[in-house]
View 1 (cartoon, rainbow, N blue to C red):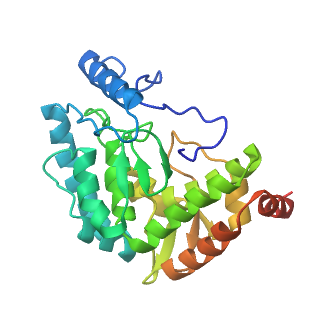
View 2 (cartoon, rainbow, N blue to C red; view 1 turned 90 degrees about the vertical axis):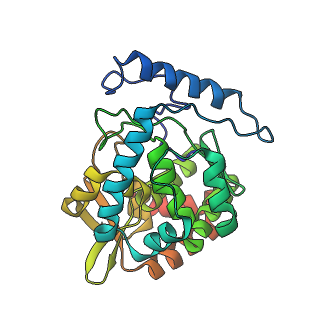
Length: 279
């Protein structure tokens, strides 16, 4: 499952577009999105992963975003993420198929990509559609640039990949919707929109920041708060805007240690203890 706060409207396979989506009036873009939606809906684990029929302008968009993001990652991404970038070596000249991402990623940390939303058992379930070319710096929902440039580069770090596996284990342990919601918010403010103090400055490790060159230039202007599991689990968020509140770990070492302790022990009883802290 994709960890998403209850009540947030997400697009399971990208077949429908919200009213303010930049591709709403582009008939050819909508048709390609619908085709990808059908592929994902029909896919079952064990089937060959279907190839996405990307158009030339979508490969052009990937090249533009890859270049813009790489330049910003050098300045603004944490060292651990950049080591993942160096290890994975994603192509910059075309949108990679999910099989191509898996072939690069699996030898490093064992993760593979499938074309449905979710996370668990060493599989990262990914959307395949790409943001609209008219607004390359923005997407109102996760697209393949977010899923691959953001998350796959994270997953190429053994330390970050270990946290993803622990998140999947924790999801399977909890039973109540409230406990899942709390975990989804912690995930949001770490693996999606996490920042860390490094070399005397604030750097990003979250996939949501690192796949958006607009947000990369803006995140240091957010209300940056100390890293606190209880506070993150109680903090609401809006997926349609730059994040106004972020939580900064003191270092990647501290992040991994704190999240490991939290995730290894997280269950419904642990949720109740955290909830009492912010009640």
